[in-house]
Each structure stands twice: as structure tokens, then as C-alpha cells.
Length: 275
Image (cartoon, rainbow, N blue to C red):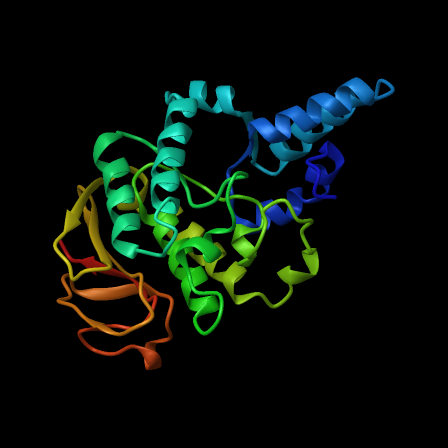
């Protein structure tokens, strides 16, 4: 019901499995709501929590609170989230959309952390599409760009509930689950999650930013046998770029819509190099 209740999470386990996620992270706000439920319950809370853990486990999904996740992956989650939040606040303080500042913030996080948590959304700000995308002419394309960027960076990508549907506005609004029907943004998330799971470069590879035109973010992810070039145009205009690598393996535009040596508005592209 949008309030973080245990039964609500349990009801969406099959949806999360179909999406392809490996873990559920209960953030501090959700933990507080769960604690309130525990205090107000008639003794059924622990049974419901055990049911959540059990059902998630049967679907191959782990359930973590912030601190538990940090212990599991060897990362100080509070530090990682604070770092991302600081970068986001710095960006928001500009009051206008300056893609170059967004790129700078992400690059800094990649450079300064061995394995950061990558948040595009959290419970303290509006949706990522409102902040970094385009909610009108390039709504679907920019939502897919943010999906690809989130899942291509070094570290552990975190998807805030509803982000995978391309929701806009307040993150605290109830989720309309009907929006999962025939949702091309959701399908792109599934594709991108599956691609990441099968890519050593994205899971464990190094990160290096590549020189690019202003407001374009280009970087490499490279493992021993795989090198990927990631291209992100964070503007609503076409931008000429030099493409590296050998073949396009994933794009948020159809093949017929792409243009040679051009990044279209909010285009996301992964080019693989044969090494």
C-alpha cells in the first residue's frame, strides 16, 4: 500500500524475480515503518517477516537491511549512501539541470570508491526522471538512459521501487501496479539487468572515463576478456561523437533509428570491443 508493509513486499516477490533482482534492500525509512508495525502488531509480525525471508529465498532473492548489506559485501553502506546523497544535494543546489555537474558527481564517486552503491533515486528527492531526464518529448528514451547508466557503473546498482516503471513525481506516492502492463521501460530494465548479470566487465571490471563532448558521458568497463564502451547523451539534442569498439550490443534506440557517429537525444549505447 505504499507504506512499506511486510505483506506488501511479500505480494511482489514474483514481480521482483521476473524483474531479475538478486536482493531487496530495506532502507532506514522502511525499517522504521516495519518497527512501527511490530509495535502495533498482535504477535503476527515475526511470522510475517519470516514468511518474507522464506518466500524471497525460494525465489533466489536475499533480504537485507542497510547494515546487513554492508556486512555481506564488505562496504560501509552508510558512508556510500551519504556520499551519493552529498553528490545529489550538490547537484540539486544548482536549481537547474546541468548534465555536466551530474557527470562530474558520478565520475567522482566512481574514482573515489572501490565498490560504491549506485543510487539514481532515494526517499529524500523526486524521481530521477524529474531530476536528470526528460518527462515530455523524450520520456521513455531518457528513462531507459538512466536505467542503462545506473546498471553500467562500477559498484552495486540500487533500483528504488517504481524507478523501473519510469515513475515521476514524489517517491512517496502509492505505486500503481497497472503501470507494469506493456511497459517498455520495465522491459528495458529486465534486458539491462540480464545483460549485466552476464557481463564480467560490468560486474567486476575497472572503470575509466573517456574524453567526450560537453554533457556526454563516455566511460569504459573492462575485465580480462571484455571491454565495453558506455555512451550517454544527457541532452535533448543530437551530438556528434567518436565511437570506439567494434559493435553495438545494447541501445535504447532501435537499430533503424540510430545514426552513424551521432548520439541522439538521451541515447544510451554500449559498444563492445573484441579484445
